[in-house]
Length: 465
Image (cartoon, rainbow, N blue to C red):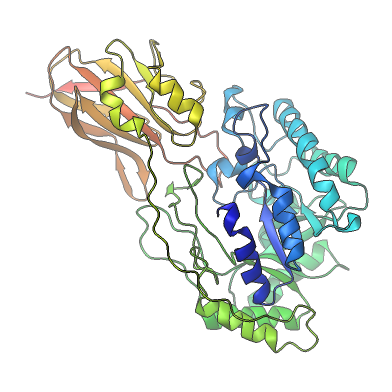
């Protein structure tokens, strides 16, 4: 959401009777380019936290370094992939060094907002669902995070982890409070989940850090996951009866602007992160919102009683003027190049780069990461050695738009759920320019693979007839 909307969304959450919010801080959003951290505008997390306090809301802050959130690369910066064969979310020294530099910048900014210092932050989450990571038992890594956070914020800061109940063994960290996450389940399953948490936290409170109000939507997905109001409220009331604390995930989801959506195999997450949450993507009041507010209103002695139900905001259609340099792609690419950057609307620097006709000649295609190009599009160009035929590309991440000369031939697709297309019949003559504009549709957010974006080295061309 835009910073101008922060107070409105927070006030709507407070009006429902909530007493706290839980937020992520995606590392890659603040340090798009290595060594250039930003905390201005939509990245001004301290201002956001001050607004939360003004709205009588505590904050639970999930600092990562990996956050998931169906966000581009799970919040990890793309430039980490420039370190050959780096093992992210492990004790790989190169990864730990980068994390330390980032936390040395971030954590001092958060310290004044801790509850002990008069701010709204009650708890800090370490990593995110680490037990589900295939290399998620690297305790050297998790202890490093724990100790680094305490070094900056103090030994008394309350740290916590979040994992599904079946993944607590590797997700838990000694000396860090263990919480679980789950969605709408039967009461028996809720009992079972909390019983598992009790094995790791015999004396602490029961906590479900992510009680799912809905689910994400990916491109080409069929159907949706949208729990009923009755199921959502039954789970809420039963957990409250058990004395448990829980966070609605999401209460407000918002929008993945620009290229910040991640990919959740086997497809990319759509621009909307509505999540079928109590507050819609436009912050409208939903049936779920009304049900939650009415329930909280009737809880005797609740310290944050609901306020008046806010009016829905008016819908305003704004038109903006942009110089869409990407639309001039075919005319601006040099005739003698094999790879060229194409405009990325997420970066003014890239737009200028492209406007100046920046291009790189190489024998083999380079990845987005090797080109220092985080998001958007890259055009790969070569010449046809034969006339028309079947073009096959072994790996393309993620979509490829094929041109011969300036004539569009079709699209290649790495993965859209069950749909995949790796070959195309093209029409052209020997010597014609073949251009493949590759679109990065978001790096994997959950699997945490090294998701390089590239048109693979090998192209197979078979003449027809």
